[in-house]
Length: 250
Length: 312
Image (cartoon, rainbow over the protein chains, first blue to last red):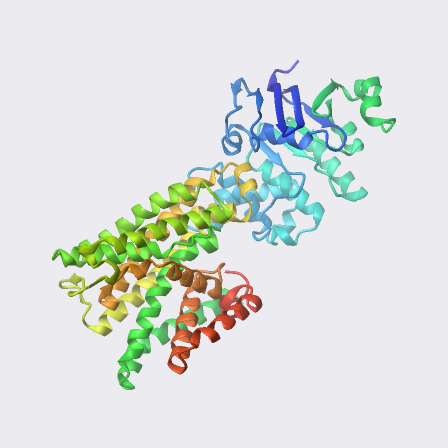
């Protein structure tokens, strides 16, 4: 069995009376794709935001590769090897697709307190960025403003920016959100190549995506994880069916 | 518009500005030399504000503070008989950088309306400090009896030489600004403006970059202050009045926030229209106001959008 890369213990977060994360325990192993599913309002995005460092938990600990990172900022976690994609597309619409990815490369390639040479011309930033754009299938769109790309392409750019930081762990928040059936199939195909040799946390509504990609699944309901197991185990779990899926899992 | 046409537009502007002293002499209208020199000094100040406002997204409503600090640095040294220009201008730049560091360190931790109010509040403090120091003339300010001395280099009493010095500094500031916003550093502050959450997620902590930009902008504006006090030959706390900060903001917005040359166009448009209207009627502000409103409504990317097209 692979060793644990991410370990979450007793994570709790409330907004007023709403308990968005209720004593969450989670283990993500090196090399696995771990899906987190749950109905709307279950607290999935709140959980992922705490993992990525965009939100501070009220209680609980997050350990990454043996280090307690609970108090670290999102930027510091990025430098430890965390990368995140957002449910609502979060890019730089005014920059080109290439510049979007180059910025992610730049954040991990030496000091950015450089005031003189044009960053766009730096080959050390351009080449890795181009490779990642090719990898997600946006090679031909590199020079276009990111804001002018189609929705599916922007979703791919999201993932490209996360990939460009060369992460040890990627948190993907609903990568197929808002996509048509065909785009969804293409993204699933892409993610199934991407997942090889990488550790992924996949928060997703789309059951096709979850069951074709995940090695293990955790089910989040009302801020609590009610079950963790292989896709087969989760499909068979009575409590999961009752609490959440109501027969939706075929 | 491609980069070649843009270069032609810029070069034409530069030639026109370089020809002003000649034209003023031929028309026997030294007033024009004075006017354009003043406009260029404000253009340098507006350009520095644009670095943080346009590129950094930091709505500083207190940029006149550095104009004042730069001017007082020169004025105070002159008051005590130190007329060496190198020393005076070095102090103007250094003191405004320090003041910007202090104001920025506090204000950049906030955002939105709080940022606007804190930068305004600090500038008002400096304004009232200027009023309260009787030694330096208090409310009335003081005359700069002797202009900054640069022995062997330039004599600021020579109106043409002073004019070309200001033009040279303006061109240099444009060039440095252009390098800055396209450098790694510039990309980070622009990215943080465009999408802060994403910028943090890819591994940048925006604070130190924003603070550095704030200090650079303050230092450049301090130099503009040193130029301004030499230009007017007197200084008052009015240099730091909040209406002055507002004028600088307006030059940036009118000229176009997303371009380096925009604030220069904004400074020319605002101050020349102001000058023309005030020569025509004493109620000129009644006309200027609606003009400004119209320009904001219909020139979304400012005057630079008309001259330079979309991308710069």
